[in-house]
Image (cartoon, rainbow, N blue to C red; front, top):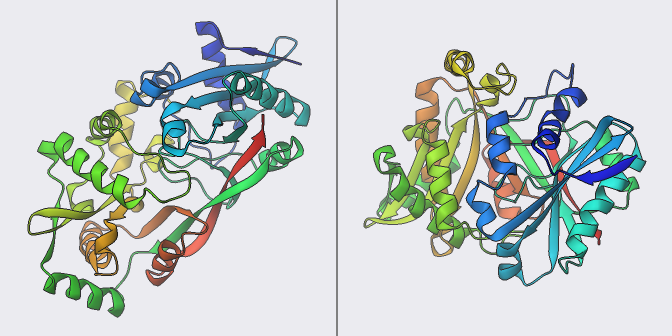
Length: 367
């Protein structure tokens, strides 16, 4: 077994297509869109304005049996002043020896950049699908959440990876009637002059900057957080614009000043799983057909300025979203992801009727 960096377009083709061999016959796997993956892994995402990525393939004789990416995030380094690099896009067709070889290659790249440790999986940052699924293999992932075989946990831990943080996902049925506590809290917010409006899709690039500013303020003390850049917010606006439902993307304001936001997205994985990674004309028609049948949503983003917490802003956002979900016939929601020690959000998820059903793990390994 040998591990070599990806240096040619043929290597990249093999890197991108390896998951199709690994997940063949797995009813829960959702193939990623190949064009989006190619753009991401060739540095076209604004994340790479301050980041480097090095891809590696493991081969046994002429067969590709594993892959990994080593990621140097200079934005993270500037914000945290902690020399930690990252690994992501990990897949392994074989045993622990292959996993160890892949990690050694990623470690070597990051060691050469002066890093003390490697952390992951992140694909390629904490703003993207991240974590290794370690609990909850009996159902498919929701939109923009990762998925992997159960054996990956054993492979990574046998190679010396140690848990550094768990990320949680909660599932809940859309309420028949909202809980009284949510109603009381939302009414309190209204009395304080807080109003909720829909995101203006026609001005989505501007709205994305409003969301970015609240997000960076609300999340700045969370473990692993790195501020979202202006360019990343613009990228998000461009790529999510066709997917956003204005009634499920909300901004809370007081006297015209934004103080919180909430974004729910339909679980587009339920449509994407039928495309086999390709979005040509036929794929687009399939996507349009299957998206009409989606009845599940994911709470993708939620943020409230620190000075407006415990004032009912989140309850008012939830209540407004609930009314839209009910009207549009959605029945199930996922809240993800939530840091395992973010007791405020965990309690909120439970008060909304959520039940913990999936767990994702971030690992760390010295370089």
